[in-house]
Image (tube, rainbow, N blue to C red; front, side, top):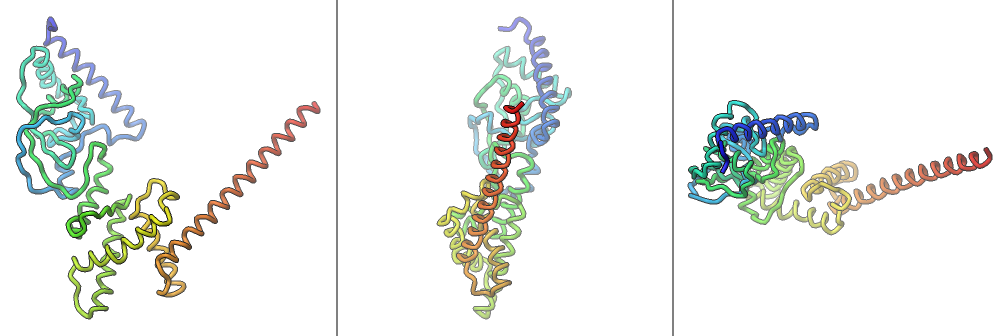
Length: 314
């Protein structure tokens, strides 16, 4: 037992506040400003289309899965170190309670996907972090969202998550085709996909000579346009030459090239021809890069050889 928990809690706060300060400076210097604050629950709700809250009850929640706050997201960093001195007294009281073995009430959390946001109990979570506790008792309210959210999600990722949530809300493809994994790496890719679907719907209407329901166009596009191209992507192992990209990125890339080829040679050009043309172009670029690299290495070796010969003569 600490002799003076009140005094010790004051020392503890100064230590964590100092660590938070230097962490904030480091984040600013390295361009990682998004790591200086928690995620905002209200911003997340708005961007990834959260709805239908339901009370889950008491649970033990992993501390590392708590990534944001309802109202105090600017008062703590992503590891819940306090960023302001206004937190000092409340933080000290919670810290002192731990020293005195006082049982504190559970915190209240919102669950969104795989992560949690503090509704009440930010200082308790902060002190629990400092005590290296793995779990914390919490009353949990779950809210359903269409957009993905994980413990690795950062503020800058919310734009992509929001675009995905909007796309799924508009298309309902996660319901129409539950196994789908449509995921462009850039938020703008969802707008391009929406445009593809609308164009497909337009031509389906011309062919049928009547309006086509959106769900019909969506499933037709997914089954007859998107997945055949994705199968070509897998067959030709295209992603091996596109590190960090997704199958959806490859689909958009191929469809853009197919459009260009059809503009030049007519609508008879098939998607597989577009894939073959792109792959050949990629191989040509790799050959050119290899030639340039080999030539540069040969020049360097020759220069080194001349320098070595000159040194021997000296």
